[in-house]
Amino acid sequence: MTREPRSAGSVLRKIVAAVILIPLAIVIIAFAVANRQIVTVSLDPFSSEHPASSLTLPLFVLILVLLILGVVIGGVAAWLRQAKWRRVARRLEREAEMLRSEVTSLRRGSGNVASVPEAGNPPERLQLRPPVQ
Image 1: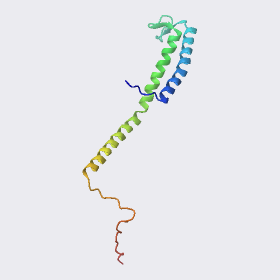
Image 2: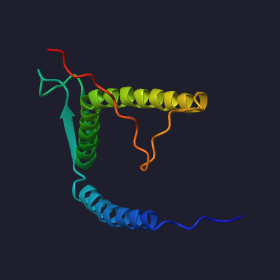
Image 3: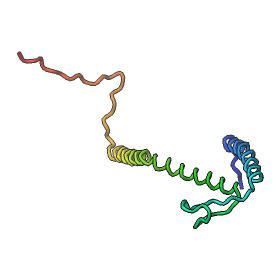
Image 4: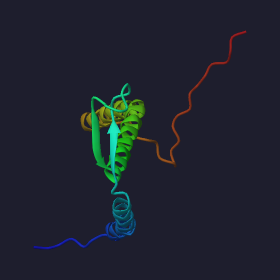
């Protein structure tokens, strides 16, 4: 079996990912260790002392869940905002494909396409009659 050599871009991408992800993982782990306190999140806006529904979990879990939820909501909002551009791109791609197939069929079907005149032989000039007075 032959292995394809790795491109420089692939190796560079892995190095950059490692340089970013390793410190990020260290910061997240340090954050989790520093914020292990148990917190109660009340989901009942009417009763703060005896809520109908509440969650009890470590603070770092709550913050990470909210962060992930914010990223997901932001991604969905950006995706919805770009719907117009995706629609335009699909339409233009269909038009380009239609034009490519039309050019291919014209090239295939027309063997005697009018040739472009050579530089040494200019085309005949159009003879115009003088205006009538």
